[in-house]
Image (cartoon, rainbow, N blue to C red; front, side, top):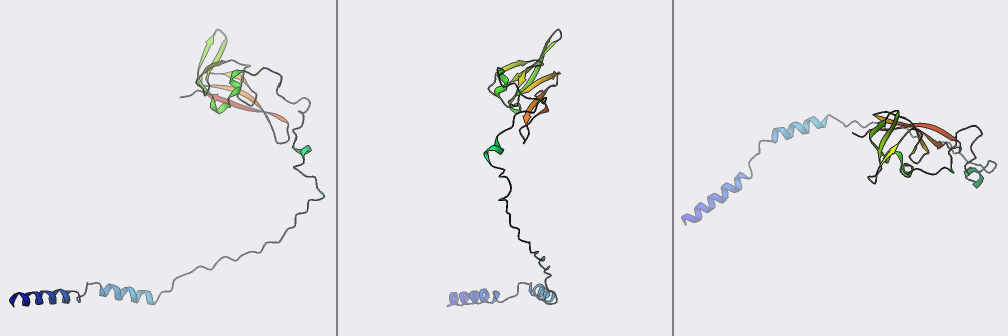
Amino acid sequence: MRLGAVALVASLCVALSGCGSDGMDDLRDWVVKERKGRKPRVEPLPEIKTQESFIYSAHALADPFAPFNLKPRAATAGGPSPDINRRKEPLEDYPLDALRMVGTLSRGNQSWAVIQAPDGAVHRAKVGDHIGQNFGMVTDITEEHVNLVELIQNPLGDWIERDANLAIAE
């Protein structure tokens, strides 16, 4: 019987310990009291502006996507234009940003830029040679970079010149 009495007292102690406070009652009371007097601030939604409806009626205007509007125009007289009949040089097969300048060579007054293509092939380029896919022509070679002038078409189909360069790879 003694063992039963000990077990009974132990189970009563465990049961009574669950009835005790965790010491957080005063904190809970304070939180409830603080929340009673406050209302959350909700900013009002912005006013929705109504948009006027617009009916697009371009039936009287020229169609910008008509075939005659999409064809590039012939170059204007006196303006720059690429020589389409010229034989392409090896470095014109690659876009300019895919080429890397790796050095320079010179003999007497002649200078060459050493250009590496994406396939690993190394080429020489001198002033007057063509580089890149935009009809770029080398105008100047220094130890740090190659200057060139590219011919590109503007949205109207006219050819315009654009300066570009190829800097030495570090």
